[in-house]
Length: 175
Ligand code: FES
Image 1 (spheres, rainbow, N blue to C red):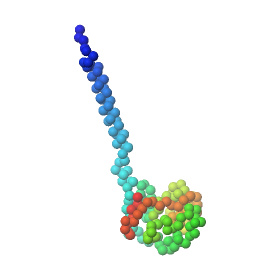
Image 2 (tube, helix red, strand yellow):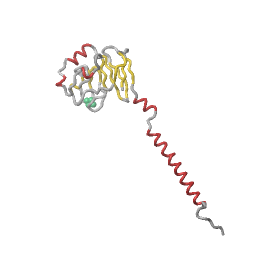
Image 3 (cartoon, rainbow, N blue to C red):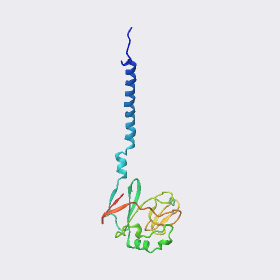
């Protein structure tokens, strides 16, 4: 008859150790994809990145639409009369009181940059339409002026301004 001292490893001990090791490796392997999935992929990082917009091709009176973080952004090259109209308003009496000067960058009054989403329920307003020749939202009739301020309809707020800066007189960076 063979006897084993308690210090000698048995086959059962070996199996227990091997199983525990395999479980640890498997656990780590299972955790890695989870951690990996929590990191943003390249397209997500790119979608959140700032964008640069060249203003040169945008003619006076024209509005272009770009996308930043998946949202439409309107860049409007305002005419002198559009700026005048935006400044002639008693802005303190507006539904969301804000002066035109607060909505543009100093020295760049001709450029208005707004998020192109109606602040009521998120439709995309149409440019150069509505009573004030700003934007008109066809969903429920909100009207914005040439400063993107709400003037009529159910929208509770002016069109939002994205964070942006002038890199030069002819280029902006949004984001
Ligand atoms: S979503 Fe624009 S008025 Fe309702």
